[in-house]
Amino acid sequence: MKKIGLTGWILIAMGAGVVMGLWVHYTVSAAGKQSFSEGCSVVTDVFLRLIKMIIAPLVFSTLVVGIAKLGDIKAVGRIGGKTLLWFVSASLLSLLFGLLIMHVSQLGSQLSLPLPPATAATGIESGSLSFKNFITHVFPRSVVESMANNEILQIVVFSIFFGVATAAIGETGKIVVRGLDAVAHVILKVTAYVMNFAPVAALAAIAAVVAVKGPELLITYGKFIIVFYLSILGLWLLLMAISALFIGRKVLHLMGAVKDAVLLAFSTASSEAAFPRLIVELEKFGCPPKIVSFVLPLGYSFNLDGSMLYMTFASLFIAQAYGMHMGFGQEITMLLVLMLTSKGIAGVPRASLVVIAGTLSLFNIPQQGLLLLVGIDQVLDMARSATNVVGNSIAAVVVSKWEGELGEREAEEDAAMRA
Image 1 (tube, one colour):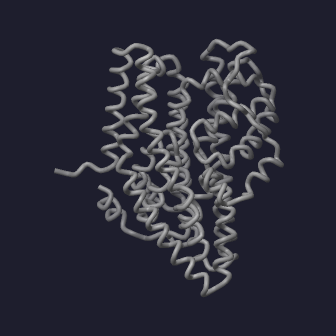
Image 2: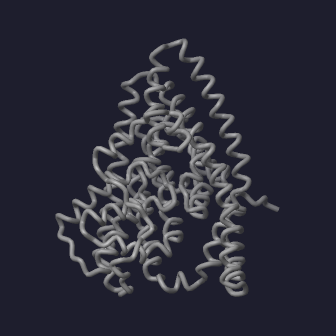
Image 3: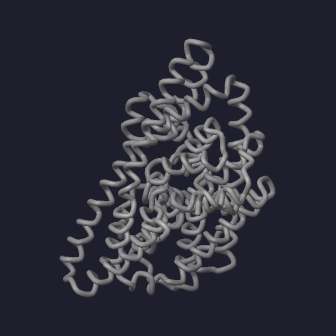
């Protein structure tokens, strides 16, 4: 009998979570539901903490080793330029696709949801969106502080400097490279241990949401959720079609290779949770470690395709719900603002709402409109987190192909290994 893999266990756990959540929703008091949800959140939080403890050392060690192995600053610049070109193109595609879907569906107008009072609070701090604050935040004042706070973009900046310097000192630097390479392998082994708890975390995360919200959540906002999920599927197909121009049918095998990571991001609503697993799967697929360790950390700050689609989707939905018409120039400006302010959110749950809140204030759209979406944000976050993983996987493979270093294994062999 065929052994059940991680994907199978996560799917089983998600199904069990739905059943358990519905049972609690219909048989337990309101206070009991809340207690159950809080208890489940402990399990999910512990798992995400275990993942987060891995992120900083893994990003630092793999990125430094990857840059040092590239050999020189020209190679770093070449690969970095190709990577950022893909990221910017994919981000613009995601933003424009969300804009197109909302213009076609006019979803906010059709739902006719009740508007919150002007005095209502969102519970979400928008923060400052100034260009100065964004630029200064990119550069760490202390790498220890950056690692403690899991500031991926800041860790990436330090790692690039450290990796280039390590390569520049020649033979002496090879000692550091070998040491960090060993550290990366140890961290990946730790990842394998942590991933054994993924199905339990998936069950708890799904059960917690369903127990409190029940099926009413999906019924009340069903149309919005369906359109958003169909849009996510459309974005997946677009990204796959474009990547097929570079790697052909191997894109289908790529989707099979990263399915565990995508499911994990979906069930936990955090693309960070899938980061360590994604490194392993992409290297198995044929991407060279030096490119994977360079592209993925950058992708988690610059290539959040699912979050990009959602931010356009949600911003225009709220404007439509309030009956506010935005001109073409305003919409393009909004896209550019979202392109800038979304960098560095690194797949953190609810971070997209913070960016949306700040963007709405710039266009005089009531931030209270976020109250229309907060209740279903967990369901939406699951889809956009999974999409972030898909987008970064495709980016790593395409850049590897551009560099002529994508492993050329037979498709049948790939499929057999992942069956």
